[in-house]
Every structure is written in C-alpha cells, then in structure tokens.
Length: 104
Image (cartoon, rainbow, N blue to C red; front, side, top):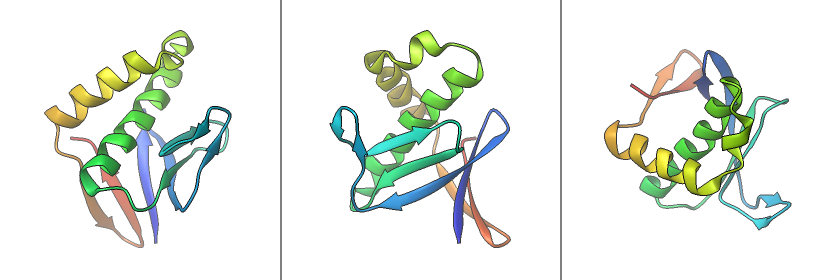
C-alpha cells in the first residue's frame, strides 16, 4: 500500500528506504519535487519519523508557494517543521488501498 501526503493539493508518495543518499551526505528524509516523492529512512523512532516527514513537507510547501529562497534555509525549515509538528497531530489513515497522511 502506498503512503501519500498532499502538499498544496499535489499528492506526494512517501517511500520508506533503508538508506538515503544526498549531496550533503546521509539524511533521514528527502523530497524530490519533479517526481512528487518523499523518501524517508526506515528505523526512525515514530515521533522523529513524523517530525522528519513534516520537515520534508515544509520544503514542498515553500516550493509550491514560490519561496524557493526559504527552502534552502534549513534552520528556517526545521523551525517551522517543529512548530507545525508540535501544534498539529499527524494522522495516518487508511484511504481505500492507499494510506493518506493528513495534516489537520
């Protein structure tokens, strides 16, 4: 079953992987805008996984609203992701044959 999160109405597939390689080295999550996917490292504590997912969603939100200048600011992205993840409870629900990840 697929896990999907909608970022500004655009569905992104969440793919769990054992290892994620990025230009900056190893990471726990990475969004690929042109492929509409978010890769997440397996084995993270559930709370950290959710927070990392919100971090990647924030990157996507910033791109969708045309603020590419802010998406490269990891301090800003992490601060906003922490505020969102601590304010809203992240829910994962079954939706037909897919899992939909909803940010209320």
